[in-house]
Image (cartoon, rainbow, N blue to C red; front, top):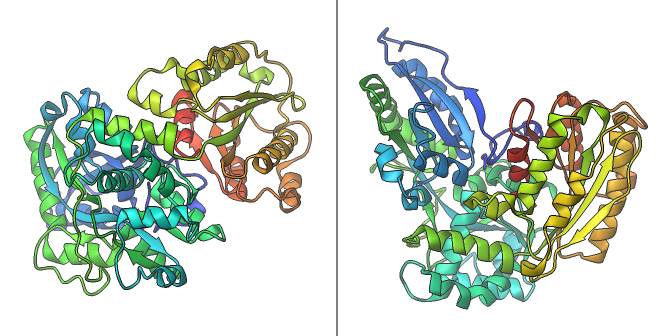
Length: 531
């Protein structure tokens, strides 16, 4: 969910979406005029990473030290509503608070809120494609976009609605528009629009767990015509040299208004710090810089935005009124709308995994097989039509075991997966790259058998490679493996070589997820947003 302005070289080591990060933004304790203004610990969506430079200036100007910890939208909302953020954070800064507002207990956990900026979720298309469809001159409806998608007239990438606000916002917009009711979506509206949603999803060729990673993949992947993302991300891509025509559907878009929100129970010092920071951020001069630097619309009137946002009229899609509607829509998308995925889990069972580490791995995979009954657990569970391959390794690659989940998954015995992992024995060394080469052979075969699926490799290792070929040898033969488009998502765990694993992720177009000293189960769940 991080913006496209984050340097691409950093993407392989970023811990995206639902993984919590900590980045110290402000490092001064007093403003330029010498006054003390306190500090704010802010739990934020990774979308606001591109605001870091402005926050550093805010710290110097106001004396407010800002410490950002990044989280995924659903995980962050549930943490706040449950009271888990109280005492750990002073404020939150998500793209919007709409999902949070639907959760029981949310009202009692939040206080004052100030909108800082806004950006709608829209469609960006290659100019030649937009012109061919006539959408450069007249904005289409979501139904027209779905019809064109089903007819094979364009392809696109979109983030996973279970992990990213931009994907969720797009899903709400298209489902609401297709329902034709002119009002907020209800549970009864969802099933009837599934066939139209399937038409819309048929053209999707890229998925991701964050808006920024999706933008990078879109730039790096030839043959994809468009991208559904924040307007700000698309404008950033255009500024960086990617030709795009921004298409704003005429029957409604979801708009994120980035409300900086104080948590309930904040003391007077933190309230003053909050007031100082929000006053600075909403000042006309800073609002204009937000427009110019991060391509978001201003939150206050009278700011000159130039011509970058065009003259399209934004019609805001009404948000669902209950959490049941929101969650049902996401689950329906995952189970009945989007293309299924295939993934090869490369699992380290070397001797160093014995004890707590192998137990953590067993629990992590049990959660994906249904042991985690939370909302997030339901979203990240192995899904209908999915093919899950387990490939253990130690001194050498082991034998793969494939689990094919039928399209109607109700009758599938997920206990097979947990039983398999429970029976893994630990011993020996760590042949990472020999096993990865085998994994890619499996993944390529699976992609050939089911070309309209998302295929990926997940590597979990707790140590450095000490058997078989080296990273340098694997890297040298990467091009010959002919595996472009199959990313490796690397879980950093135990004593893994962080630098080398980051290089591996970057080589394959993947991402790293940090579970060193942290939560292995959470890292596996985070990866599910990218599959």
